[in-house]
Length: 171
View 1 (cartoon, one colour):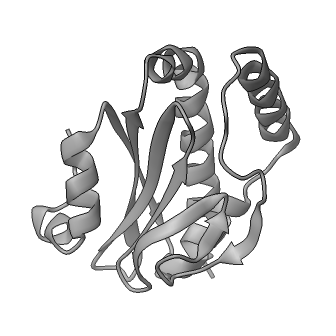
View 2 (cartoon, one colour):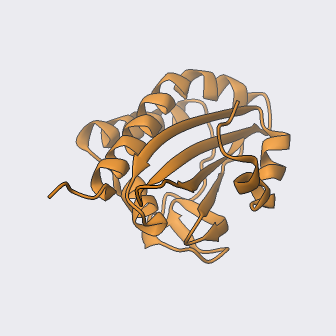
């Protein structure tokens, strides 16, 4: 169950629609600085060596399973314009003050990565990092079960790193 406030979710009809079709949904919640664009950029820029190694193994797995992945082209920076790019995601919904949703389409599944910001009284934000997965054929659930433990590890690490990079420093 998501912890995003209902009023915030209602402002993102694209995400509401994707949730209705989801085969898998998960959420990581972290507290970060006040800037949604800075948080999203830090989230998508997080690429330590261990994460790059996991993505290389994922590429090999996809080849073995004959899975088509969307573009391997990774955009630098993050667009907040619908149709723009953020890493290998295509922006589907965005508002620099409240949320960003990007989608990656592969032949066997589609995944949406959403960041929804909830303002806190101290000027920081609670960031809800949500993954929504929809399987397209029988390969989708098989593939996702193989990578799911790593998915939780990766998205959790990305969210924590983004929160740390964007959190105001104590003086």
